[in-house]
Image (cartoon, rainbow, N blue to C red; front, side, top):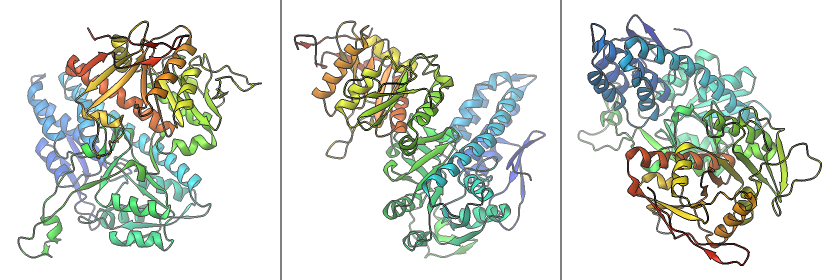
Length: 570
């Protein structure tokens, strides 16, 4: 086979049976839905991106099987697609890919196949882009010499459709002459590191050593590891990472020893609709995987087993999550310190592509001491570069003299946040669901509060309480869209001074939402989370989940009077 691990051939999906490696590269030909489901469940095909695309090919097979005289039995094809999506619950890519191709089922198997082949081609490009971004980051963070990299599980072309994610980054680093050696965890209990990663590294000509999982922390302690590169099966809205069991322990050890811990994954692995890692369903696998191996029993008969397939690494232990878009979590702080304009431009172009910063709308900023760097006024966010920025004083929002651009009109909103919080970055955008929801709840002449209740996604936007639990409600302040933007900034500053523990989000009726965080990635992720939350409520048809009330009190107007206002959704 070539660099691709998944091939469509005359009505069947052809791949390598990963259960037989490294002893034999056995070709596996799958032509029924049951065969695809079995291959995914038994790890003949494994790795989040790979099982996603394999699942999409399964929908092609299902659609063809349920087509008679050119007419698709959509209900039966969708039922098979649901079984495919449920084959492995932890990896978000599988359900994501199945949902994507399901829209083509009524058009017939050829339409589903065309969409799947598009995804297959995209995956190769995505992996190379993510791998290159990750390699660039590793070389910025690590010593300027050939590196000792530690990795866990398998993240190469076998786990994707081509090139790989974390192993892809190692391939890029190796091409640059920047790899001394890769330390490969064997990855118990099924030895994906020993069987698959070692095989792929040998195939690529990259030097490696194999070690038992429990030796990894000691390798770090004895100076044998410069950075850790792993993949992911799901990344939640707050940056928590689900990956092969054993990843969490590596992250703890890397954090203790000050070693960068970098996650490389496609954007399809990010799940902004899931608030935290606590919401992830972790698959429990068969006891026989632990009580024996290769047909030999290694534990007493009837031994009870704890065999989770994955664990969840908290965001605070992750140095960076890198996708094809570049730095998406944790790392934009690092980039912003050296080049805030470029970091802002990266995210602005991404959000423009989603339609959340249409034309010249929206603005992004990064705190730089007593100043902030913010997008310039009147510029298309789809074409923004690192030079299209303006530095302003946080104290009074005034631009530093002798700059080419004018700052965004909403600068006073950003500086109000910086003056009243510890935020390092602010994002102001116009996503459709959150903007519409806030506008319907807003008042034309006074601030209101929109209370959203009873959704788990709230966890992605509120702080944990002293007892370790999360609040079940979210209060979203909605400010009037005054023609004088400085007046909006004054409203916001007064509110944040009165509410120092408020969630890091706000809205302006008819004028978008604003979020902030410890870095650009976190501010952007919170905006994504708020949009997903509002979409959930709207699509579920649950207006009772919203309550707009007079609980927001903001000190403002020239006499310092308290303004309150009540408003409810239609």
